[in-house]
Length: 164
Image (cartoon, rainbow, N blue to C red):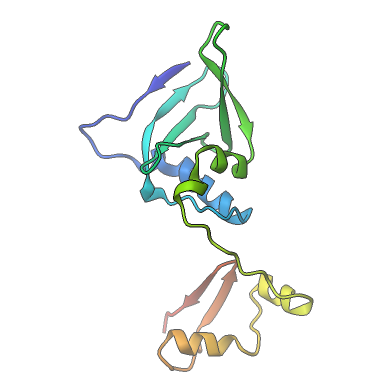
């Protein structure tokens, strides 16, 4: 294992932050109540492992808790091995466990996820099919103008094609 640290004399690359972005997305999909806000973390470095994926380490500003993530967004926990040849091992763990181990419940305000409606409403909610009251939501967002644009609903985000 080798530790790589980001250079202090040049800007960070997006690629260095992609693992944290993927973990944040995964936490949202799994409805973890403590969100991963990218701007609340600093990049501590990357552990280069022979024959296994590199593990990026991000530290939270408030409590110095660490999230360990590979390039695919898989989260890890570090297990020290004091009597072994190396200093420790990274073992995969689920995103909820990684967030908990990083101490985010102590420093991040939890969020509540709106549950999708039941039955036929749930199918429309997931597919993006317009529902009778959807245009009301769009009119409110556009200051009262009639919504004639195409919409796509993806979970918590509604994308409005305003190309007119």
